[in-house]
Image (cartoon, rainbow, N blue to C red):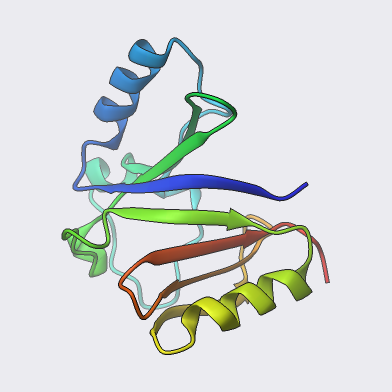
Length: 145
């Protein structure tokens, strides 16, 4: 079933923020926190310090009414820079690759494509775009080819 969640980017304090949100909303993480060291390193990527390797790759927390917030730490060593405008993203999880492609095409029309749709190591058909109104959209379709 399709889902929508809110994706947040933090400058290195995701875990602190999400432990606070967990206390406030009195809920539990949907899965253990994934760390940067858990992800495969792209060819030519810089080595991460121990602190960066233990940074948050992904965390998910239910809040109210079935809404889930998710987040990551943005690492400057990987070329990430958090600014107002990329700190909040609407995450769409369509049921099919076809619906994902349709939504991505419509939302990226007239905007700027940040990352094209591609198959990712966690099993999703994933991409991100900035629409022509300046809103960031992330796509995570778990349907296999």
